[in-house]
Length: 461
Image (cartoon, rainbow, N blue to C red; front, side):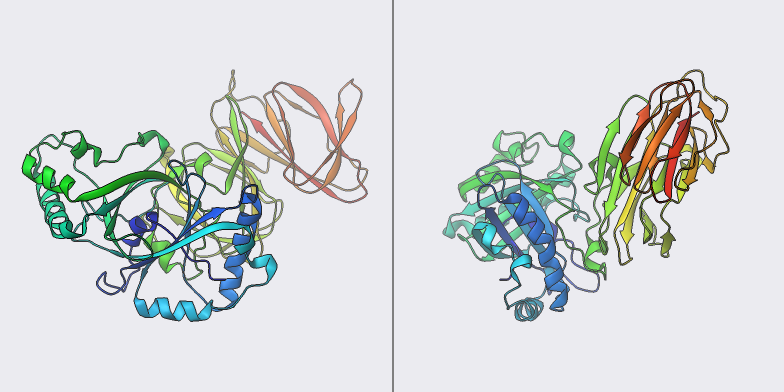
């Protein structure tokens, strides 16, 4: 089975033609819309991720972007998209993935219906600046035309395109246009708008300005010709799924589709485990070959590596940096550069997964600057990090935390807490498990396991 892609959302993306190609030749978008059998979404997603590995083994190098439909008649469907191709590249890719993958890499058994379509990007009909990045949310409008009115539709859209930049006091439309080539009812066009987040999406298309008469200086005759050319019109919203998407190692497609930066907690590889008035604890996991979205760091932070991994960092607007290797148990305490928020993305270029605990500091406790509990291995203005490597049966020194703190297991360990003048207790902890203590405590940490254990404490100042 060849899993490629579906329906109209791809069109928006199609406008990010990879570098070195012109839109006259590399303007083909392949879209596959998949409805999954009831109760099989988890199996489909798991198998889809494996399916990209099968593509790689066949020597197929396309990048695939995945969205889920969040509103409308196709709610719950998956949109799988590849964009910016020539027809020659389509033929070559079809030949490479013409075989049948093994069962564990084949999502077809979990699919209820599949619709595949090809579109071509129409820059002459697209309104507003060319889209450079897929954002978290997109609104997609499918327009079916009366066959005899195609020319009217194109003329009107071009007139609107010319008129809007000069419309004084009216928000310009911003929509990328794609025309269906095969795989659906024609003549069909897609208009796609992107939104930074759900807060900036009100459930309406920019075309509603034309529907409701809020079209500023665009002549009424032009607006009427637009609507008279339309046979039917339908809009839906889509949510980008970076965790299901495939970006090839070459990153040519990845570079072409850099998205608007998202908040830390909205990045799909980031899993918020705890958030309170003082801290936000995020576990970040990144499989080999994958990249995070660009995401925003707005606070000082500290954390610990749970794996050995090799990654690169790319600051927004800067070239990708050189590979950097991190070791299990490595800790950090970072401060914002010049106190300012920044955006970056991380690419796992190693052979194994990246896994880490990151703690964002939201508020300092009162009074600030409590004395250190022990010798720190890293610190910033918000926190100190202590690391304990304990042989079986050994304990840390007794120490006092004056402020709230987090205890994180770096390795599997049966950790015994030895509170001063209180009964000790022990618990099994796996790598990444943590305990938040919101108060003062005097204790020692003891390894009640048969193997060496590593523990990190992150204490607020």
